[in-house]
Image (tube, rainbow, N blue to C red):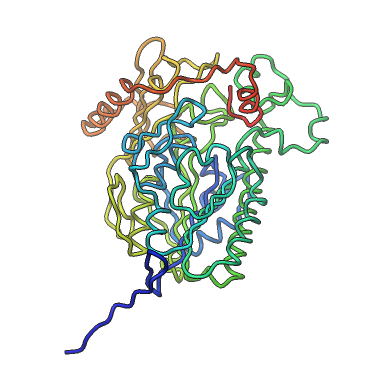
Length: 443
């Protein structure tokens, strides 16, 4: 009987198999799924680089974020836990808390396995104080400003060029996020645009461009931001190909949340709703050697499924998780939960109380969405037929299944009664508040 040797190579205090795949998470902040042309033939934005990754991988069509704001969403991506599991319900500057060190991140798991680990992020929301830097030997960006994805991609490319051995890398671009005025050409702002006083109140203050209210301008600027993000994703992919790392790599492309246009009362904003435009996200997984290239997966999935999926494909041990590995073909869940960040103190919104207890909640199946809103007239619950009304605009009168009622009851009981950190004063005039407003983080 022969002897089979399992070869392990020691690197520092970790280990890795010779066939360990490189693993990369490429994330786009604030990306609506209908602005990725691999998902929508009528996409207003051209996204050839994300489309190419979808052609080489698996495109998940029913992927949802657990929360429509950046910090908590990425805490879920990097731990495989839902917000109740990791405790991060909103961004730090909204009174949120950092990720507890009791939760193991993907970077920590890969570092322990001997991987070189590097994160290159573009958003101030993802600064080290959030706690997602743990396990990364390099955590570049996010400290004092938001930056263009091209700058972030160039930094990551330089780092990649001097690495040996297997890599776990995270690239994040902020380009579609407001303030959208930064994406406008000077000549565009001198044109005659609609200026409707009644409409202006629907725009958050950080998104306003003078008194302009013509939605075409804002939507075109958003699409421009998406195209810039796609170009920066392409820069990272080009670097991987030049270094011979692309073919054998596991690459995950995702968004943390979407963006509201004019579907609800507050326009060109997010974090306010658990509806589809803010929680339905693109998710593409390119397997090593492009296995299953060009396929579509219509199972109901969540961003909390990313961590267990990545760890299983890389043959690493997975810890406690609320997610499921998406490596098979069987359904992994019948329902998925999403929530907004908090109730914002904005004139056009009818939500109470201000803060986390007034957040919006949703439970989805493949067929139905149930949304709970805490309003001045009490809780409002609406259901939407996802086939007949995918935009979730017109409620249906069809009965809500018992399973969905029970799931919503459990979510409501936890979120409405939970204590959240104090909200910042949006009217404060101190330097910190002024900086947050300039970055697009205050109403």
